[in-house]
Length: 369
Ligand SMILES: [Zn+2]
Image 1: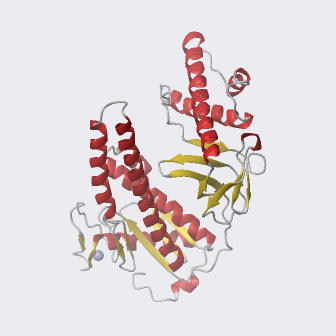
Image 2 (image 1 turned 180 degrees about the horizontal axis):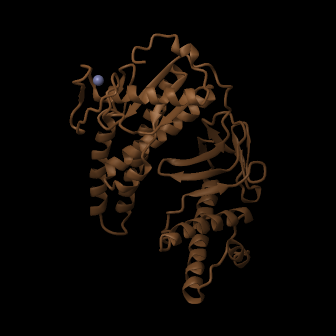
Image 3 (image 1 turned 120 degrees about the vertical axis):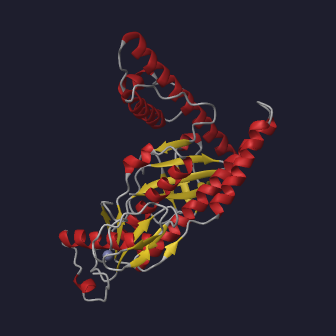
């Protein structure tokens, strides 16, 4: 599964319609949330999706399928929060930003560069730009952002028949460098993020100082939203470029499994962004490799940074120590590169165990094997 995205250019009239549909979805969402909460508090009863659907059959002027997906979305949010002992929040004005189009063929179609959706609402012939060729589109959505309107669609990826493995690499994801690999390549996360983030916090402070409810405040928050979007785009471009590099160059990439539990625990913002970037990177790498008939092997991160990649001795070191120095075999190496070599070894073992044909790789000169 992969999400494809394109910018769309609805007419003024269509924008108005989309805004109305978003606002009606928001009101419906809040209405159903209120109904579920009060029914639970007063009667200890849980209203199901079907109960709600019956209740709001005539609610607002919107396509019936849109009504269904709003209820579906609310129901999912409600169950998620309820399990943890709370209720989801009501959505404030402007906070409902996407319209789900559930099924290709019934809710929407793509004809050439045009998106066609509900005819009754005049949402036809919306021009798109930058959509890649699709294989088997399923659900899609129209999203409102600070910079305009976007169309996102979930598509199946076309996997190529697996190839023989002739080239392999192990990669270590870290904080100092985004990636360090077994071919001694180090890739830093671009500094531009930090610059933009400083700018963002400045803009945010400016906006919060403005008079409440004023037009100036609204405009200032628009500026903030644009910067946020630009940062997200820069990050995405970097992740695409980096994952493309590895997918094109190697038949097999070994990488550590990300520690999801540890991530949730970490409340520090910059860290959580980093974690999210790693997750996105691994997903991008995964589908890019698959589309080329190549392999991504995930290995458990046990001792990959402590173990000596040459002799297997455990060399304890804190995070601040950047060099791996092994007293038992004399290996001196950048700590991340040492880790990447361990990841590579584990990855090749695992691949071998899965019957992935590595023979052509073994005959090549790989000094650390
Ligand atoms: Zn050693």
